[in-house]
Length: 231
Image (cartoon, rainbow, N blue to C red; front, side):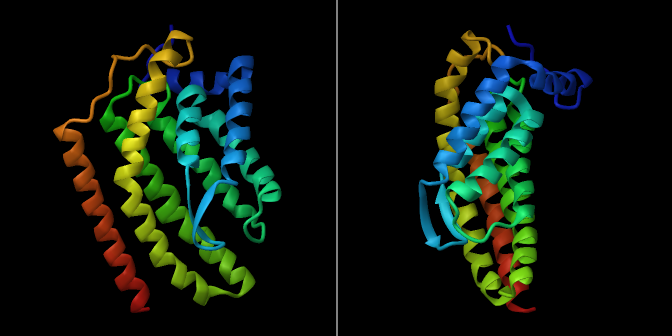
């Protein structure tokens, strides 16, 4: 049976590092990586080629829950590199690899070696949105557009990107809660994740948390719009 560890414990990081030596974890990582690459082809464009809606966050979360943040980073690097050439949507720019690596790393901090509950899942998705989509993506995106001389287009895309990520946050959290609830117990029986407490229900506390986080996110959008329109 899988043990549960605090993210801040030494055992947690030793276990995450040992995933590189487990054949089962490597096989699952390869499958998840292949699925992430395939999902890149299924996108809903908003402002092509820079802004779109994708379901890769679901695959990311499942993989990080099973084999942790460190192996997840390696899988992210591979999926970004291969996916960029198999399903290209724009000019390849290497620094975007760090966003693909950061996403499973952050998910792993919240979901790996943990007993799941809605609060953890909500915070996991919120952290990924903030760190990857609202911090790293604008930084790398600005760098990319400066590199190819299209800063004006980037400023236009940035505000819709913020609005898209934050408006979808509640729905994405609910999707993750439902999906992880449906697969966590079977995965625990197969020894892939720690034993779970049973059904993960969305209660009033989780709804309130989603409302609060969304309000914080909207505040960030308003600030970003004010900042970019007054530069």
